[in-house]
Image: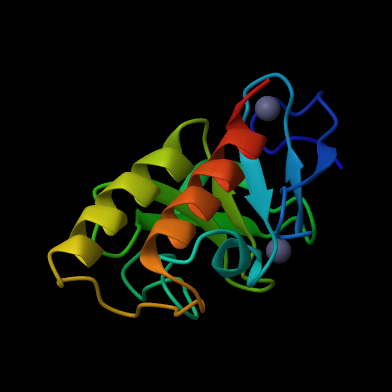
Length: 142
Ligand SMILES: [Zn+2]
Ligand SMILES: [Zn+2]
């Protein structure tokens, strides 16, 4: 599958350490594609059952690499990060660094008790934070 952004670069399937979840990443722009529910599996503070809001705008340049439908651009819940999502398959495209931003913002909301749609993962908090760090490192580090 080709990167929705670079177009001529093939996405590489990478496994997120400890989660076993496989995601598709572009080696050129470092963007990551998450199929439906994959983000929740990787990031415990991810919004549960994320969907395209009705007022989201159609992305002018990006289309879904699975079904070729246009992606819709909107603000990830409780962050200022703009993400792109397919209405049909609910796949989600994150540019390089966006995953980290979502993580940081939503994690701080969680710490202050303001995080909504919290997807619980069993275990002590310290373990959770280490788990997230490992997941992010595995995706972003190279
Ligand atoms: Zn790319
Ligand atoms: Zn699609």
